[in-house]
Length: 174
Figure 1: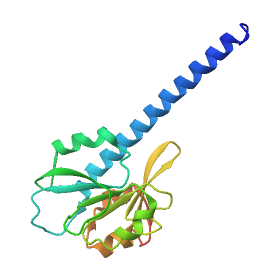
Figure 2 (figure 1 turned 90 degrees about the vertical axis):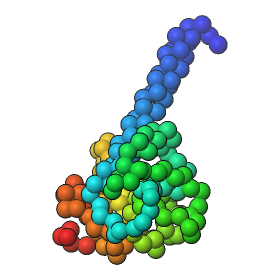
Figure 3 (figure 1 turned 180 degrees about the vertical axis):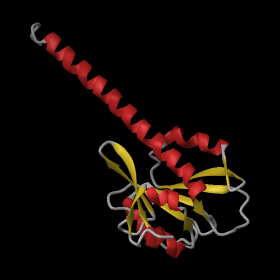
């Protein structure tokens, strides 16, 4: 390598490393925000009564949260401890109160789950039948809510949550 190009090379390498660090930090901030939303959904959604000893928050498919979501297990929801479950596939004997679907192709298999809040982040998630979709607009995490899908599941949603979201399907009145 030519010695006169070495400073430019080092500057470029440093820039790439710095940008990669910023990107990683942006991703971790994004998933901290999404984890916060998942927890806060427990305050704005009403589930029909069940006899589960834990409130199950499930992640289906690849887990984009990593360790960022683990502290949620130190909290409770509906008077029960929260249990975090990472699943490769759904099994018939497990009830998830909230199911985060990390991959779009899994949506078809989970639409029929009754009394489960189905949340995802794939493109057009709510429009394709998911209940709550995370969308990134103008560098902010926004919510799209498929009101019809939520109503069909037997869940009830607070008007306060509807106020901060874009409504997909339904008239927005509860």
